[in-house]
Amino acid sequence: MTVLIAGGGIGGLTLALSLHQIGIAAKVFESVPALKPLGVGINVLPHAVRELIELGLLEQLDASGVRTRELAFFSKHGKPIWSEPRGIEAGYKWPQFSIHRGTLQQILLDAATERLGAENILTSHHLAGWTETPNGVRADFIDKATGQPAGSYDGTVLIAADGIHSAIREKLYPQEGPPIWNGRILWRGVTASNAFLSGRTMIMAGHEILKFVCYPISKQPDASGRFQINWVAERHMPPTYQWRREDYNRSARLEDFLPWFEDWKFDWLDVPGLIRNCTHAYEYPLVDRDPIPRWTFGLTTLIGDAAHPMYPIGSNGASQAILDARVLTREILAHGPTNAALVAYEAERRPATTDLVLLNRRNGPEQVMQIVEERAPDGYKVVTDVLSLQELEDIAANYKRVAGFQVEGLNAKPPIVQIAAATRAG
Image 1 (cartoon, rainbow, N blue to C red):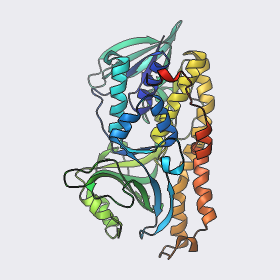
Image 2 (image 1 turned 90 degrees about the horizontal axis):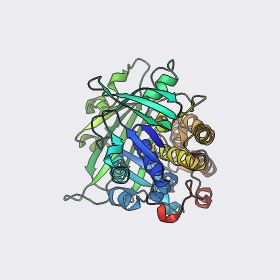
Image 3 (image 1 turned 45 degrees about the horizontal axis):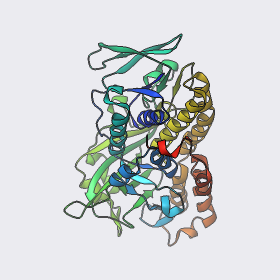
Image 4 (image 1 turned 135 degrees about the horizontal axis):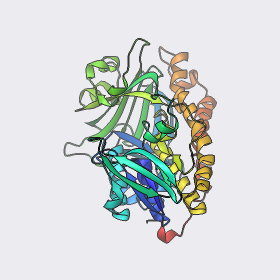
Protein backbone atom coordinates (compact mmCIF):
# COMPACT_ATOMS: atom_id res chain seq x y z
CA MET A 1 0.00 0.00 0.00
CA THR A 2 2.54 2.58 -1.26
CA VAL A 3 1.67 6.10 -2.37
CA LEU A 4 3.72 7.22 -5.38
CA ILE A 5 4.75 10.91 -5.26
CA ALA A 6 6.13 12.55 -8.40
CA GLY A 7 8.22 15.50 -7.23
CA GLY A 8 10.65 16.02 -4.37
CA GLY A 9 9.96 19.67 -3.63
CA ILE A 10 8.38 21.15 -0.52
CA GLY A 11 4.90 19.74 -1.22
CA GLY A 12 6.06 16.26 -2.20
CA LEU A 13 8.43 15.85 0.76
CA THR A 14 5.87 17.21 3.22
CA LEU A 15 3.37 14.67 1.89
CA ALA A 16 5.89 11.82 2.22
CA LEU A 17 6.64 12.77 5.84
CA SER A 18 2.94 13.14 6.62
CA LEU A 19 2.07 9.74 5.16
CA HIS A 20 4.89 8.15 7.12
CA GLN A 21 3.46 9.79 10.22
CA ILE A 22 0.16 7.93 9.76
CA GLY A 23 1.81 4.63 8.80
CA ILE A 24 1.36 4.80 5.01
CA ALA A 25 4.35 3.90 2.85
CA ALA A 26 5.43 6.40 0.20
CA LYS A 27 8.02 6.68 -2.55
CA VAL A 28 9.22 10.04 -3.88
CA PHE A 29 10.43 10.33 -7.47
CA GLU A 30 12.43 13.37 -8.57
CA SER A 31 13.53 14.17 -12.13
CA VAL A 32 16.88 15.75 -11.28
CA PRO A 33 20.00 13.63 -10.60
CA ALA A 34 20.44 15.10 -7.11
CA LEU A 35 18.21 17.12 -4.80
CA LYS A 36 20.19 20.27 -4.00
CA PRO A 37 19.25 23.25 -1.81
CA LEU A 38 18.44 25.66 -4.65
CA GLY A 39 16.45 28.89 -4.78
CA VAL A 40 16.25 32.03 -2.69
CA GLY A 41 14.25 33.12 0.34
CA ILE A 42 10.63 32.29 1.07
CA ASN A 43 8.20 32.88 3.93
CA VAL A 44 6.25 30.09 5.59
CA LEU A 45 3.07 31.36 7.22
CA PRO A 46 1.82 30.30 10.68
CA HIS A 47 -0.83 27.88 9.40
CA ALA A 48 1.84 26.01 7.42
CA VAL A 49 4.51 26.30 10.14
CA ARG A 50 2.00 24.66 12.47
CA GLU A 51 1.93 21.63 10.18
CA LEU A 52 5.73 21.42 10.03
CA ILE A 53 5.80 21.57 13.83
CA GLU A 54 3.30 18.69 13.88
CA LEU A 55 5.93 16.80 11.87
CA GLY A 56 8.52 17.48 14.55
CA LEU A 57 10.58 20.04 12.62
CA LEU A 58 10.46 23.11 14.87
CA GLU A 59 14.02 22.72 16.13
CA GLN A 60 15.40 22.57 12.57
CA LEU A 61 13.32 25.55 11.47
CA ASP A 62 14.47 27.62 14.44
CA ALA A 63 18.09 26.72 13.78
CA SER A 64 17.96 27.77 10.14
CA GLY A 65 15.26 30.42 9.71
CA VAL A 66 14.22 33.78 11.10
CA ARG A 67 10.98 34.21 13.05
CA THR A 68 9.38 37.03 11.08
CA ARG A 69 8.28 39.78 13.46
CA GLU A 70 6.40 42.18 11.18
CA LEU A 71 5.37 42.92 7.61
CA ALA A 72 5.68 46.56 6.54
CA PHE A 73 4.60 48.32 3.35
CA PHE A 74 6.30 51.50 2.11
CA SER A 75 5.92 53.88 -0.81
CA LYS A 76 8.57 54.23 -3.52
CA HIS A 77 9.94 57.12 -1.44
CA GLY A 78 10.41 54.87 1.59
CA LYS A 79 7.47 56.38 3.49
CA PRO A 80 5.41 54.05 5.73
CA ILE A 81 2.03 52.86 4.46
CA TRP A 82 1.03 50.00 6.73
CA SER A 83 2.67 47.54 9.08
CA GLU A 84 1.36 44.62 11.05
CA PRO A 85 2.88 42.08 13.42
CA ARG A 86 3.41 38.56 12.16
CA GLY A 87 3.69 35.13 13.75
CA ILE A 88 3.86 34.95 17.52
CA GLU A 89 3.88 38.76 17.79
CA ALA A 90 0.52 38.86 15.97
CA GLY A 91 -1.07 36.49 18.47
CA TYR A 92 -0.67 33.23 16.56
CA LYS A 93 0.29 30.13 18.51
CA TRP A 94 2.91 29.44 15.84
CA PRO A 95 5.66 31.58 14.31
CA GLN A 96 6.11 32.71 10.72
CA PHE A 97 9.52 31.84 9.28
CA SER A 98 11.64 33.59 6.69
CA ILE A 99 14.02 30.95 5.37
CA HIS A 100 16.03 30.03 2.30
CA ARG A 101 13.88 27.79 0.12
CA GLY A 102 16.75 25.38 -0.38
CA THR A 103 17.31 25.19 3.36
CA LEU A 104 13.66 24.31 3.97
CA GLN A 105 13.77 21.68 1.24
CA GLN A 106 16.95 20.24 2.79
CA ILE A 107 15.28 20.06 6.22
CA LEU A 108 12.40 18.11 4.67
CA LEU A 109 14.73 15.93 2.61
CA ASP A 110 16.91 15.04 5.60
CA ALA A 111 13.85 14.11 7.65
CA ALA A 112 12.33 12.09 4.79
CA THR A 113 15.59 10.25 4.14
CA GLU A 114 15.91 9.38 7.83
CA ARG A 115 12.30 8.34 8.35
CA LEU A 116 11.38 6.74 5.01
CA GLY A 117 14.85 5.51 4.07
CA ALA A 118 17.04 6.69 1.22
CA GLU A 119 15.71 3.87 -0.95
CA ASN A 120 12.34 5.62 -1.04
CA ILE A 121 13.71 8.96 -2.31
CA LEU A 122 14.61 8.26 -5.94
CA THR A 123 16.39 10.81 -8.16
CA SER A 124 16.82 10.72 -11.97
CA HIS A 125 13.25 9.40 -12.16
CA HIS A 126 11.12 11.50 -14.48
CA LEU A 127 7.52 10.38 -14.91
CA ALA A 128 6.91 9.19 -18.47
CA GLY A 129 3.37 7.84 -17.98
CA TRP A 130 1.08 5.79 -15.79
CA THR A 131 -1.77 3.33 -16.03
CA GLU A 132 -4.35 2.13 -13.55
CA THR A 133 -4.15 -1.53 -12.60
CA PRO A 134 -6.54 -3.88 -10.74
CA ASN A 135 -4.66 -3.05 -7.52
CA GLY A 136 -3.93 0.63 -8.02
CA VAL A 137 -1.60 2.44 -10.39
CA ARG A 138 1.66 1.70 -12.20
CA ALA A 139 4.00 4.59 -12.98
CA ASP A 140 6.75 4.42 -15.61
CA PHE A 141 9.89 6.54 -15.30
CA ILE A 142 12.83 7.57 -17.47
CA ASP A 143 16.17 9.14 -16.74
CA LYS A 144 15.56 12.53 -18.35
CA ALA A 145 19.28 13.12 -18.94
CA THR A 146 19.71 9.97 -21.02
CA GLY A 147 16.18 9.15 -22.10
CA GLN A 148 16.67 5.59 -20.86
CA PRO A 149 13.97 3.73 -18.87
CA ALA A 150 14.36 4.09 -15.08
CA GLY A 151 11.83 1.47 -14.05
CA SER A 152 8.14 1.01 -13.31
CA TYR A 153 6.61 1.09 -9.84
CA ASP A 154 3.25 -0.03 -8.49
CA GLY A 155 1.32 1.95 -5.93
CA THR A 156 -2.15 2.60 -4.62
CA VAL A 157 -2.40 6.22 -5.82
CA LEU A 158 -0.19 8.64 -7.78
CA ILE A 159 0.29 12.21 -6.53
CA ALA A 160 1.60 14.95 -8.83
CA ALA A 161 3.86 17.22 -6.79
CA ASP A 162 6.03 18.07 -9.78
CA GLY A 163 5.63 21.83 -9.93
CA ILE A 164 4.46 24.46 -12.36
CA HIS A 165 5.77 22.45 -15.33
CA SER A 166 4.11 19.26 -14.05
CA ALA A 167 4.43 16.30 -16.41
CA ILE A 168 1.26 14.80 -14.95
CA ARG A 169 -0.80 17.97 -15.35
CA GLU A 170 0.44 18.28 -18.93
CA LYS A 171 -0.86 14.80 -19.71
CA LEU A 172 -4.19 15.52 -18.01
CA TYR A 173 -4.55 18.91 -19.74
CA PRO A 174 -2.54 18.55 -22.99
CA GLN A 175 -4.01 21.70 -24.55
CA GLU A 176 -3.15 23.98 -21.63
CA GLY A 177 0.18 25.26 -22.91
CA PRO A 178 2.91 27.07 -20.96
CA PRO A 179 2.36 29.10 -17.78
CA ILE A 180 0.78 32.53 -18.21
CA TRP A 181 3.16 35.48 -17.98
CA ASN A 182 1.59 38.72 -16.77
CA GLY A 183 4.28 41.05 -18.07
CA ARG A 184 6.25 41.32 -14.83
CA ILE A 185 9.82 40.18 -14.20
CA LEU A 186 11.36 39.38 -10.82
CA TRP A 187 15.06 39.70 -10.09
CA ARG A 188 16.01 37.84 -6.94
CA GLY A 189 19.12 37.53 -4.85
CA VAL A 190 20.63 37.20 -1.38
CA THR A 191 23.10 39.80 -0.08
CA ALA A 192 25.17 39.92 3.09
CA SER A 193 24.20 43.25 4.65
CA ASN A 194 23.36 45.10 7.84
CA ALA A 195 20.12 44.46 9.71
CA PHE A 196 17.29 46.94 9.14
CA LEU A 197 14.23 48.08 11.11
CA SER A 198 13.43 45.44 13.76
CA GLY A 199 16.00 42.99 12.41
CA ARG A 200 13.13 40.55 11.70
CA THR A 201 11.02 42.70 9.38
CA MET A 202 9.77 41.81 5.91
CA ILE A 203 9.34 44.97 3.81
CA MET A 204 7.61 45.74 0.54
CA ALA A 205 8.17 49.10 -1.14
CA GLY A 206 6.94 50.69 -4.35
CA HIS A 207 3.83 49.89 -6.36
CA GLU A 208 2.45 47.61 -9.05
CA ILE A 209 4.86 48.75 -11.79
CA LEU A 210 8.04 48.86 -9.70
CA LYS A 211 8.47 47.07 -6.38
CA PHE A 212 11.16 45.92 -3.96
CA VAL A 213 10.78 43.24 -1.28
CA CYS A 214 13.38 42.13 1.26
CA TYR A 215 13.77 40.31 4.55
CA PRO A 216 16.51 38.55 6.54
CA ILE A 217 16.86 34.78 6.23
CA SER A 218 19.77 34.24 8.63
CA LYS A 219 19.36 34.36 12.38
CA GLN A 220 23.00 35.03 13.29
CA PRO A 221 25.39 37.56 11.72
CA ASP A 222 28.54 36.47 9.93
CA ALA A 223 32.05 37.38 11.14
CA SER A 224 31.65 40.93 9.81
CA GLY A 225 28.32 41.42 11.59
CA ARG A 226 26.19 41.12 8.46
CA PHE A 227 23.07 39.06 7.85
CA GLN A 228 21.81 37.24 4.77
CA ILE A 229 19.13 39.50 3.28
CA ASN A 230 16.82 38.02 0.66
CA TRP A 231 15.52 40.56 -1.84
CA VAL A 232 13.19 40.71 -4.84
CA ALA A 233 13.14 43.54 -7.37
CA GLU A 234 10.12 43.58 -9.66
CA ARG A 235 9.07 45.57 -12.70
CA HIS A 236 6.07 45.44 -14.99
CA MET A 237 7.69 45.35 -18.43
CA PRO A 238 6.39 47.17 -21.53
CA PRO A 239 4.30 45.14 -24.00
CA THR A 240 7.25 44.96 -26.43
CA TYR A 241 9.38 42.99 -23.94
CA GLN A 242 9.80 39.37 -25.02
CA TRP A 243 10.10 36.60 -22.42
CA ARG A 244 11.09 33.09 -23.46
CA ARG A 245 10.24 30.02 -21.42
CA GLU A 246 13.76 28.64 -21.73
CA ASP A 247 15.04 31.73 -19.91
CA TYR A 248 13.13 30.86 -16.73
CA ASN A 249 15.34 31.15 -13.65
CA ARG A 250 18.31 32.48 -15.59
CA SER A 251 21.20 34.49 -14.17
CA ALA A 252 20.38 38.19 -13.98
CA ARG A 253 22.43 41.15 -15.19
CA LEU A 254 22.38 44.08 -12.78
CA GLU A 255 22.37 46.61 -15.61
CA ASP A 256 18.98 45.23 -16.70
CA PHE A 257 17.22 46.45 -13.55
CA LEU A 258 19.49 48.33 -11.11
CA PRO A 259 19.01 51.73 -12.84
CA TRP A 260 15.32 51.76 -11.89
CA PHE A 261 16.22 51.51 -8.20
CA GLU A 262 19.29 53.78 -8.05
CA ASP A 263 17.51 56.53 -6.11
CA TRP A 264 15.78 54.18 -3.64
CA LYS A 265 18.16 55.10 -0.83
CA PHE A 266 16.04 55.37 2.28
CA ASP A 267 17.31 56.38 5.70
CA TRP A 268 16.49 52.83 6.90
CA LEU A 269 17.51 50.79 3.81
CA ASP A 270 19.94 51.18 0.88
CA VAL A 271 18.13 49.35 -1.93
CA PRO A 272 20.71 49.92 -4.72
CA GLY A 273 23.45 48.88 -2.29
CA LEU A 274 21.71 45.58 -1.62
CA ILE A 275 21.37 44.90 -5.34
CA ARG A 276 24.91 45.98 -6.21
CA ASN A 277 26.55 43.88 -3.49
CA CYS A 278 24.77 40.64 -4.41
CA THR A 279 27.16 37.97 -5.66
CA HIS A 280 24.62 36.25 -7.90
CA ALA A 281 21.08 37.25 -8.86
CA TYR A 282 18.42 35.39 -10.85
CA GLU A 283 15.70 36.50 -13.23
CA TYR A 284 12.23 34.98 -13.09
CA PRO A 285 9.07 35.79 -15.03
CA LEU A 286 6.02 36.28 -12.82
CA VAL A 287 3.79 33.46 -14.02
CA ASP A 288 0.86 31.37 -12.90
CA ARG A 289 -1.82 29.21 -14.51
CA ASP A 290 -5.57 29.54 -14.80
CA PRO A 291 -7.45 27.48 -12.21
CA ILE A 292 -8.61 24.15 -13.63
CA PRO A 293 -11.99 22.49 -13.01
CA ARG A 294 -10.60 19.19 -11.78
CA TRP A 295 -7.46 17.86 -10.10
CA THR A 296 -8.41 14.24 -9.49
CA PHE A 297 -8.60 11.63 -12.23
CA GLY A 298 -9.19 8.15 -10.87
CA LEU A 299 -6.24 7.33 -8.64
CA THR A 300 -4.22 10.44 -9.55
CA THR A 301 -4.39 13.97 -8.17
CA LEU A 302 -2.36 17.20 -8.11
CA ILE A 303 -0.87 19.16 -5.20
CA GLY A 304 1.16 22.35 -4.81
CA ASP A 305 2.26 24.20 -7.94
CA ALA A 306 1.14 21.29 -10.09
CA ALA A 307 -2.42 22.03 -8.90
CA HIS A 308 -2.52 25.79 -8.33
CA PRO A 309 0.59 27.75 -9.34
CA MET A 310 0.16 31.30 -8.10
CA TYR A 311 2.06 34.56 -8.03
CA PRO A 312 4.47 34.83 -5.09
CA ILE A 313 2.28 37.43 -3.42
CA GLY A 314 1.31 37.21 0.22
CA SER A 315 3.93 34.51 0.95
CA ASN A 316 1.60 31.66 0.05
CA GLY A 317 3.26 29.37 -2.51
CA ALA A 318 5.11 27.00 -0.17
CA SER A 319 2.52 27.41 2.58
CA GLN A 320 -0.34 26.24 0.38
CA ALA A 321 1.65 23.23 -0.84
CA ILE A 322 2.22 22.22 2.80
CA LEU A 323 -1.50 22.58 3.53
CA ASP A 324 -2.33 20.46 0.46
CA ALA A 325 -0.08 17.70 1.74
CA ARG A 326 -1.62 17.73 5.19
CA VAL A 327 -5.26 17.77 4.02
CA LEU A 328 -4.54 14.94 1.59
CA THR A 329 -2.93 12.97 4.41
CA ARG A 330 -5.98 13.55 6.61
CA GLU A 331 -8.26 12.20 3.90
CA ILE A 332 -6.04 9.18 3.28
CA LEU A 333 -6.15 8.52 7.02
CA ALA A 334 -9.96 8.63 6.84
CA HIS A 335 -10.55 6.79 3.55
CA GLY A 336 -7.32 4.93 2.82
CA PRO A 337 -5.25 5.66 -0.30
CA THR A 338 -8.29 5.61 -2.57
CA ASN A 339 -10.15 7.75 -5.08
CA ALA A 340 -12.53 8.73 -2.26
CA ALA A 341 -9.61 10.28 -0.35
CA LEU A 342 -8.40 12.19 -3.39
CA VAL A 343 -11.88 13.50 -4.15
CA ALA A 344 -12.42 14.63 -0.54
CA TYR A 345 -9.04 16.40 -0.53
CA GLU A 346 -9.83 18.20 -3.78
CA ALA A 347 -13.28 19.24 -2.55
CA GLU A 348 -11.62 21.27 0.22
CA ARG A 349 -8.44 22.50 -1.37
CA ARG A 350 -9.38 23.35 -4.96
CA PRO A 351 -11.97 26.05 -4.15
CA ALA A 352 -9.72 27.58 -1.49
CA THR A 353 -6.66 27.80 -3.73
CA THR A 354 -8.68 28.99 -6.73
CA ASP A 355 -9.78 32.01 -4.69
CA LEU A 356 -6.17 32.64 -3.70
CA VAL A 357 -4.80 32.40 -7.26
CA LEU A 358 -7.36 34.97 -8.41
CA LEU A 359 -6.81 37.27 -5.41
CA ASN A 360 -3.05 37.22 -6.01
CA ARG A 361 -3.69 38.39 -9.57
CA ARG A 362 -5.24 41.48 -7.98
CA ASN A 363 -2.05 41.93 -5.91
CA GLY A 364 -3.44 40.53 -2.65
CA PRO A 365 -2.52 42.70 0.34
CA GLU A 366 0.07 44.55 -1.78
CA GLN A 367 -2.69 46.55 -3.46
CA VAL A 368 -2.28 49.14 -0.69
CA MET A 369 0.96 50.25 -2.37
CA GLN A 370 -0.72 50.71 -5.74
CA ILE A 371 -3.60 52.68 -4.22
CA VAL A 372 -1.10 55.02 -2.55
CA GLU A 373 0.87 55.41 -5.79
CA GLU A 374 -2.28 56.31 -7.72
CA ARG A 375 -3.52 58.78 -5.12
CA ALA A 376 -0.20 60.38 -4.16
CA PRO A 377 2.53 59.68 -6.77
CA ASP A 378 4.59 62.64 -5.54
CA GLY A 379 4.52 61.55 -1.90
CA TYR A 380 2.69 62.44 1.29
CA LYS A 381 3.31 63.39 4.91
CA VAL A 382 1.29 60.65 6.57
CA VAL A 383 -0.45 57.78 4.82
CA THR A 384 -3.87 58.55 6.33
CA ASP A 385 -3.88 61.68 4.17
CA VAL A 386 -4.12 59.25 1.24
CA LEU A 387 -5.72 56.04 2.52
CA SER A 388 -8.01 55.66 5.52
CA LEU A 389 -7.11 53.36 8.39
CA GLN A 390 -10.29 51.40 7.71
CA GLU A 391 -9.27 50.77 4.08
CA LEU A 392 -5.86 49.54 5.23
CA GLU A 393 -7.32 47.22 7.84
CA ASP A 394 -9.95 45.82 5.45
CA ILE A 395 -7.38 44.92 2.77
CA ALA A 396 -5.14 43.11 5.28
CA ALA A 397 -8.05 41.27 6.93
CA ASN A 398 -9.56 40.11 3.63
CA TYR A 399 -6.32 38.51 2.48
CA LYS A 400 -5.91 36.64 5.76
CA ARG A 401 -9.48 35.37 5.41
CA VAL A 402 -9.01 34.07 1.86
CA ALA A 403 -5.58 32.59 2.61
CA GLY A 404 -6.90 30.87 5.74
CA PHE A 405 -4.69 32.37 8.42
CA GLN A 406 -6.91 34.65 10.49
CA VAL A 407 -5.48 34.66 14.00
CA GLU A 408 -8.50 33.65 16.07
CA GLY A 409 -9.79 31.16 13.52
CA LEU A 410 -6.45 29.42 13.08
CA ASN A 411 -5.69 29.29 16.80
CA ALA A 412 -9.06 27.66 17.45
CA LYS A 413 -8.76 25.03 14.71
CA PRO A 414 -7.77 21.47 15.63
CA PRO A 415 -4.73 19.99 13.85
CA ILE A 416 -5.40 19.01 10.23
CA VAL A 417 -3.99 15.52 10.80
CA GLN A 418 -5.32 14.33 14.14
CA ILE A 419 -3.22 11.54 15.52
CA ALA A 420 -1.81 10.65 18.92
CA ALA A 421 0.60 13.33 20.11
CA ALA A 422 3.26 10.70 20.73
CA THR A 423 3.46 9.90 17.01
CA ARG A 424 3.50 13.47 15.66
CA ALA A 425 7.25 13.59 15.22
CA GLY A 426 7.06 10.56 12.95
